[in-house]
Image (cartoon, rainbow, N blue to C red; front, side, top):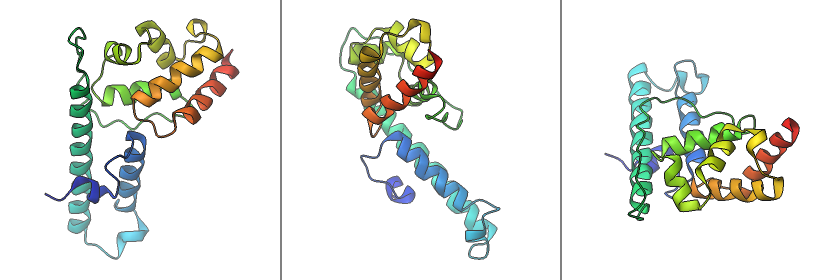
Length: 174
């Protein structure tokens, strides 16, 4: 099998959001109704390429999940692996940044306890961040730090920018 990173045209250190974006872009480019490839490929060729994108994406996600499981070396942490068999698209992080964090965490097969053990942020705080529970969130100066650490742990490319998006949304809700 070909290198899955080459199939999707991404680097090995690509973040999950960037991986998702590359995958979606290729799926759209090679879809049945795409004018860009309509006259260039037969339906069998297109289907073969789409399957190779699916397989590459699944393989990379599995590698990331295994890597995250191996990073968890603290013996006290009980790992609750949540199998995510659905291929649901990620929530829009500009509209629902908390849901996006939850989606990434679940995609990586991590529980709230796993993230809490590594980031040293309490489980209740992490849940409040994911659910965007305004009444349970601390002041912005503390919240920014929590969101940045959470985003770093989940390999979001620009955690500080992500935190600004999150805080902007929360400020509107307060």
